[in-house]
Amino acid sequence: MKRMAIGLLSSALVVGALPTSSASELSWEIRNKGGKVSATELALQGLPTAENPFDPTYADVVASVTDPTGHSFSIPMYWYQGYEIVASYNQLSNRKVGNPEWRLKFRPTSLGDFKVQVQAKINGQVIQVPSFAFTAVEKSPEPIKIKGRNFVQGEEIFIPFAYNIAWANRYEEITKYERWFKAASSNGVNVARVWMASWSLGIEWNDTGLGDYTKRLDRAWALDQVFRIGAKYGVGIDLVLINHGAFSESTNPEWFANPYNELNGGPIANPSEFATNSTARKFWEQRLRYITSRWAGEPALFTWEWWNEVNFTPISGQVLTDWIAWSDSLLKKWDPYKSLTTTSWSSGASLQDWSVVDYAVTHVYDDKDPIKTLAAQATALREAVPKKPILVGEMGSGTVTEDPFTDPYGLHLHNAHWAATFVGFGAPASYWWWDTYVDPLNLWGLTKGLSLLVKGTNPVEMQSSEISTLKSTSTLLLSDQSNVLGWIRHNNYDRSAKARLLLEAAIKSLKTKKPPQTKFPDPQSKGGKVSIPVLANGKYQVTVLETKSGWTLKSYTVDSKDSTITFAVPAFVGDVAFKAVRKVG
Image (cartoon, rainbow, N blue to C red; front, side, top):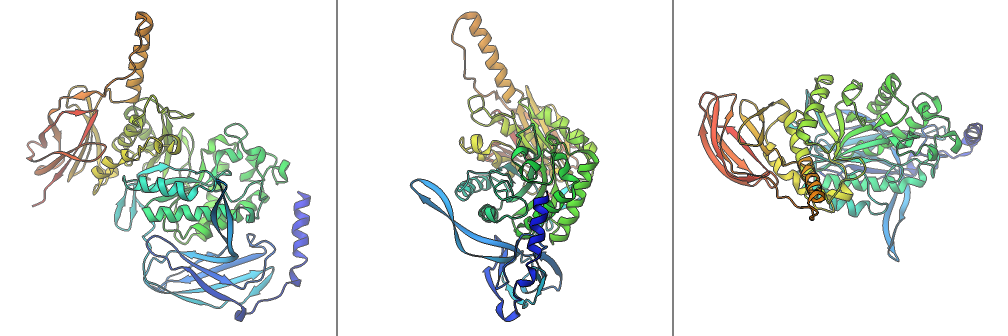
C-alpha cells in the first residue's frame, strides 16, 4: 500500500515539466461514420502524453456532444490502441496497428450535424481543444428500454431470445463470435450474454495491475469486435462486468490472482472489502468510467450486468445493494443512453434486492421437466418483482456439463425455451454450454419455431394458463383479446423422462442378463380435435406449427362459440404449437 502511494506522489511531481498543447497542434479524424451497425468513432490527435491515460487524475478528457435536435450529452473519451490477428506456425497472436490515440464513441441516433466540444486536462494542465462538426447520414437503432414489464425498442415490443455466449479462446474471438452470432441470429436469437472475465475480455487483472489497462488494450479491441459482430447480426450484448470467481475463495476461485488482493500489491485483504474500501472503490470507479466511455455508444449494447452470481462472493445484503446503487450513479453520469442494468445470483433470486437494477433474472440448473421447475421459479420471482421484467439468465441440465450422449438433440434446451416463455417469464430461457454443446451439435435452430410463433405478440402481457386437451399431453396457453398462443407437449417428451427409461432399461438388463435398451423413440400423439378458450368471440385464423422449424402444418379459419374455438391438431412427435389470431372487421 505504501509503495502505491509513493508512486502516485512521484508522478505528481513531474506535472509541471510537461509542455502545453495549443489548439493548432490538435486535429480530429473520423475513424468510423457510424449508423445502423456501428458507432460513430472520432480520434483526437496531438494531446500531450499522460502519465496514465486511464486515470482521470492525469488525463481527464470529456466530450460534450450536441445532436441535430439541439440535445447535448457528455461522455468521456478513451485511450485506444488498434490490433490485428496474425497467424504464424499454426499459432494465433495479435500485433499493434497504428499508434495509440484518444477516441470518442457515440451513437448517431439522429440524422444531420453533430457538434463536439472537449474539455481536456492532461497532467494538471488544461488543453484548448478545437470543436468538431460531424454530419450523420445514417441513424443507429434506438436503445432498448423498459416500459412496465416489457422490453421495448422505440415503440416495438422487444422479446430477448438469448444465449450465454460468454467467451471464446484468446485470439479466436472474431472467428468464433462471427460463427456463433451468425448461426444464432438466423434462428431468431437477438441477445448474447458476454463476460469481461480475466481469461477472456477483462481489461484489468494481475498482468496489468490496478488502474493501467495498457497491457490489455488488445482485449478491449477484441471486445470492440464482438460488439461490431453483434450489431452486424442484430445480437444485443448483455455485458457482464464482474464474474464471481474474481472475488471468490471457494467457487471458481480467482481471488488469489486478483490484483485487488494485498498479496498481489492490492489495497484489500479480503474480497468482501471490495465494496467498501475507498481505494478499491477508486480503482473500480476508474475502470467503470473506461468501460462506459468505450462501449456505452455501441449500438449492440443491451445491458450492463454488474455481477455474475455474486452470492459466491462474501459481498451481500445491504453492502451489495449500496455498492450497486453507487456504481449505478456513476454509470448514469457517463452513459448518455442510460442503458439497462441487471445483476445475478446463482439461486434464490426471488429473495434478493432487485430495487437497484432495471430487471430481474434467475439461474436454473436442473435436469427435471422445465415446465415444472420454471413455473415455480416464475411464480416466486414475479411475486418478488411484480413491476419489472423477469428472465431466466442461465439454464442447463447441470452445472458441470451438458451431456451430449444423454441429450444429443437438445430436448432439455428446447423445453427450457418453450416452458420459460409459457409459464410467466415472457422470453425463452438463456441457455449455457454454447461452446461445448449447442455449437458442436448445431442446436442453434431450436429457437427458430418459437421466435416465429411469438412474433407480433406480447407474451408478458398475455394470460398464462394450462388446460387439458389431447391424451398424455400438457397444453400451455398465452392469451389476450386478439391472440392465443399454444404449446401441446407429450408428457414424456422430456429429458428426465428419457433418463427414467434408461434407468428402467438398465435395471431390466441386470435382471434378465440381456443387453439394455439404449435408444427410445420420441413419444407420439395421434392428434385430434382440441377446444381452446378465447378471451373475445369472433372469427380466428388458426395456424398449427412444427415447433422447431416453425413450418405450418395446418391452417384453419374457425368461429368461436361460447368463448371457445375448436380445430384439429394433426398427429405429431413430441410437441406441436399453434397460433390463433382474431380477425378484425
